[in-house]
Image 1 (tube, rainbow, N blue to C red):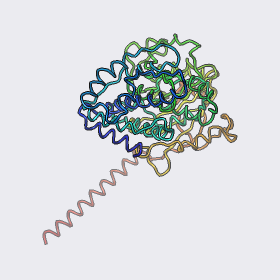
Image 2 (tube, rainbow, N blue to C red):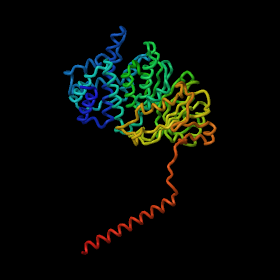
Image 3 (cartoon, rainbow, N blue to C red):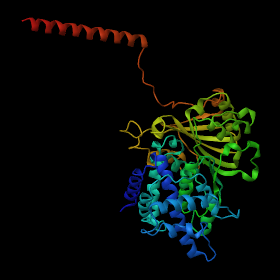
Image 4 (spheres, rainbow, N blue to C red):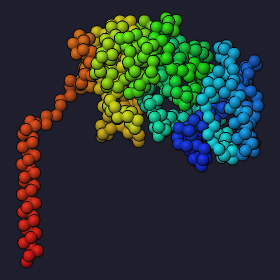
Length: 488
């Protein structure tokens, strides 16, 4: 049975259980089960590699000792074990505080986890299905990684869950253009399910990780925060799945809840890759953590202010922002002025409204900037839906190859840096002086696009009236012909 078929069969079993209500609960239940199986498979591997390794999970609660036997505990006995022993113990697991102590990871995952299923017999069926996946088998793990991302993609039916899912083509493109290296501190302050992290890991492993020391250096430089329980759990599991031994760097917290001025130079980072939540409002009092000139309850604005602060000199960022952030005024204007004074906002990639469907039909933009030198000019690239396709959709989503033309244009003719870029049907540049004259309105349309001339409105209205009159005359004529025919 393929992993895709296996995961589908697990979801079908869960649908029979009266305790699981909807996709969000089903995914949450799947996630902590996968987490325990993945970490147990990793434990087995680490026990072979290290003589002093000890699992973060007490022996009785390890997957191998209560779940691995297909004829093991089931029914009410299984439910009692999960509710009375497994969850209470793992929720209250205390970490030593030492680097690499995976007990903190286990505690953080189970802190807000729940066991929704009511039937111990259905639960045993689910567990037995999960036992069919060997997470130490590299090809199986990689294949499951694709399935896992499909599970994340399914989140749009789980209420507002879609707010923390970014299309993988977008995250992969941003990681590709930012080009992180092992040892550079990489931070996602609103990491959701870990899409940017996983794409950055894949990019570094494909290009720069050659030795075990490179892998260790890369893993030690990752930073992430997620405030919501379900995406945090999904992110931690995602990191384990991507071979991260200690994903405790994924903190369950609200990045914005910390005072802006409390972030010190020792915490500044080389790279920020993120899609901060937008369109939402932060809870009362959060804005008071920020300087007066940046205070707002708009989440995306607060994140942008913080990202500018957290970048080291020479640090670089790629951030997803909605159209509203580009043309907005007030706090948004002050933020854009601050961004262009502190950073080189060198590129804005404009995406069509359909990229984030079905979650939202809103225009979005990818902002690329570097800390340390003010902006002198900003290049724009307009991404267009492939020819023959009206819009992106769930069945025909954006793919990384759709952004290849932008990647090829990015470095200019020599393909290095950003030298030699040329204007064209998709690309144009605007000077900082022009942007300042526009009161920092960055919502600049493609000047190479010729707007269709629909004609003079008064003439169009007259043509419409004439057409309607002509149609009415034809109707009257038809009625007359039919009337004569019926009287014969």
